[in-house]
Image (cartoon, rainbow, N blue to C red; front, side, top):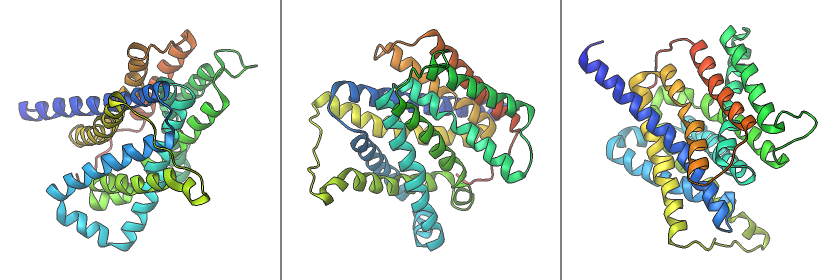
Length: 314
């Protein structure tokens, strides 16, 4: 690897790590809002996705205007984008924030990592092949991690709120949809345009979901946020969503999907660290053991996936 290639690779590593860290930071910010304000997951999701979706559209109009217009004019692609935006990105963001509201940022992010297992199992089923040794080991680690976090080592009890565990499992399934469904779109149109437009469409869906109670005559109440609350909400949209996706996707384009997947393990680490140091969330030894096992699962499954060549255009 030449000097220029090495510098590009290292820059990609930094970008991917920064993106993962910002995703974890956004989880801690959501936990902060739940702890200090009367706010619900639908409002945070709508604000996050509409804000970041608008920023993505500005970026795409400035850098990929022709591709953006062509993508929106292609009816088949637009239908796929709607499905991706609603059932992938919106469902993923909402269930993640709902999981945080019932548990905490670190636990919700670790449960979200189960999405890697669903992706692995779906890929094996489609290929009609059994999991590789590393993938099978990753599955065992993921199950062990979930068991430790959910039961604290006592199989006769559930330490997590049932709603928190349920939302975490739903979130992991939506992560699998978010990862697997848009592959064709990303191959044809590129990763950033697909993600950006999907985010904008998902933001519209999130806004409709937040305002939906008005259809049945119920009041839609704006949360009473002070300056700090709005600042944290803006940080989720700008740093934890727009900047996180942009940095991570650029990093993956430079280092490749396998290395990028490994670096994505920064997200649960970041969420846990921010929750512990910033918000004072206490974790038990079982929690930390579960977090470590889940990060190990991501590493095993990513390595077992082999070195893939990225075919998506940036």
